[in-house]
Each structure stands twice: as C-alpha cells, then as structure tokens.
Length: 447
Image (cartoon, rainbow, N blue to C red; front, side, top):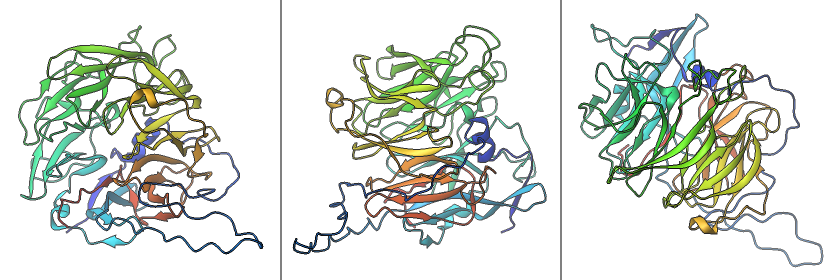
C-alpha cells in the first residue's frame, strides 16, 4: 500500500493541540521518577515500598498481578519527512499491548486510510468505531489540504469491513467543539455539527452509525457532548457569549467570552436543565484554550468538570439536583478530565509546574454524596519537563495512557506512552508520531 501523503496544510492532531494551548514554552523543572510509590488498583495488592528493617523478619515478595491479556491499544501513526509533508504509516493504525509489545494490525485497520485520528470512539458493544477523517476527492483519493476546522465523522464496522460517513453533505463536523459520544446501547452518536449557514454556531446532533440525516437535539451554541454511560442523558456545554465578537476558540476582550453553562438533556422526555453556570472553556484574551469536556462517573451518578477561571476548581455535579461539590481548588489550566473505570481516581491535565502534566487525584468511589474533598493531594504522574497530555484509562484501571513530546520537546510531535499504576513503569508504545488520541480496543473485537 502506498503511503498517504498530506501537505503541510493538513490538520494534524498537533495543530489541534496548538489550538487548544497544549504547547507552551517549557521552563526546566526537576525531573524524577514517574511515581514515588506504586498506586493500588482493583487488580491486586500494591507493591511493597521501602526495605525491611534489620530487626524485622524479611517480608516475602508480593507477586505482581499479570495484566489482562485482552488489553490492546490502537493509535493512528505518522511521520514527518522534512519536506513539509506528513505521511501516515502503512497501515495508518498501529496496535500494541500495554507493555509496548507490538501487535500485527488486523486486516480491517488497513482500510482506514481516511483517518485523521483526533478522536477514536468505540461503541459500547464493540461493533462500531467512530473517528474523524479526511474527505475523498472525485477520483477516490484522500484529500490532504482542507479547511483546518472541518472534518468528516466516519464509522467503521470491522466485522463487515464497511465504512459509513455519519455527517452527510451540508453538515460539518468541527473537532475543536468536541468529539463523538455513543449512547449506552451503541445505536446512536451525538456530535456537534453546523451547516454552512450557521458557521461556528454549532448544535448537538444525533446520527446513526450507518449514516442517515442528522437530527438536531439542542439549540445552536452547544459544545462538548458527553453521553451518560448508563442513562439516556446527554451533558454538554452551552456557549452563548455576551458579545458578537466572542468565540469559544478565540476568546475576545469582553467579559463572558470564556464562559459556558453545563446543561443536561433527558433524551427520553426532552426535558433540559441547567446544572452549572460559569464553566470555563477558554483562557483569558491573548492566551490559549484548553479542552474541558464534562466527564461522567462510570455509574452515571455524577459529572466532573472544571469550574472557574484560569485557576479553576475541579468539581463534581449531581445530574439530578445540580448540586456541586469541590474536589480540588484552584487547578492551573485544568483540562482533559478522565475518570477511572473503578471510580477510584480522576486523571486530569494541569500546568501547575509550568508545563503540561498529567495528575492523579484519589477519590472515594460511590454515589455523589460520598464524594467529599479528598484528604490525599493529587500526584504528578508524568513529572517531566515535556508536554504530557490527554490521559486515558484502560478498562481495568491499571494503565493510564498519555501523549508526550518528551523525545522532541516543544515541537508538538507527540508519541504514545503508558503508565502501569501497579509497578510504576512508563513505556513508549511506538517510535512513530501519534496523529490523534488512542483507544483501548474492546475484547470482543477480533485481532
């Protein structure tokens, strides 16, 4: 298969990160180990810390639990040929186990030549893969240059080898406004779409995996949809600026340009409610934006989001009452919230150390009312002077993948790493650059 070449105008994931403010000048900070001590998970006991004293009997070694053999990461990869062009690898998707061991790409992965990869989202049943990608010209070739903010939402069905376009002509998908989110039964996708007449004034639409006409479900000005994993409830941010020059992606000088409202839509009854006002979606004028999509708990009992200004509070919100509880105060440039499937940790991005880092906050699992402000402080998982972003939990809550430019600091060239929270090891998944976010492959998807 011939490598797919795109010109420098191509909208790579690095461009999105620049737009979201993930690449800043990086002052030198002290380096250190990934974890000061291994973190316990539900997969087994933590490793022993320290040495036994001379007067105490030796402690028998603790067996490290074996990772789930079904765990696999997939990620779109590319390389830069120093000729002002980006080349997707062949195949454009690579697979690896959490320890970095490569896995041959399945046959269906070689057909995803349109992939851009900013979003990869499996349906809950593992039947479909939704992703954003490039359009194809009249000759069937993948188009490289195109409007940077526009993209197609494509849906692949690996078992049949079929590929569907979820947003037909006239409905534009803007990755900057949030990615696809699946209904709990895997029958529908919610995405922000706009028509040429509405430009950036997007609304959330429902689409079917096998194409069809999108159905608008919110008023214009809706961003970052997030479907409850267990209920037919959709959370999103409503952006209604107070001045016509405001934009969620280019904050202006007017008060209110960077503020949104957390809304909840009951898709069964159509009832809509306001959960939280003053949600910060962008930095002050002249600075950068970041990604602050609402994140559901695994049981659908609460939502986590950053609330406030540049130093926002990490809060959890009860979807039934709108009551909020502060988990962490004054997080500098908080972003990329990811709740562990076992509900014991929240991973998030911050610039408290002067550069992008991934931090872990231990939480008390359970219903909303059992989530007090944690006693333990957050822990810096990455602790590196590079840009470390976009934490993503493995299904068993043992591994946390993240993107880092530590091999090419300051370039916006990211590679994929995983951190083992039982052993404390961090591993590079591939020498290839990663053109977007990874995804954990459902066990039901054949290799």
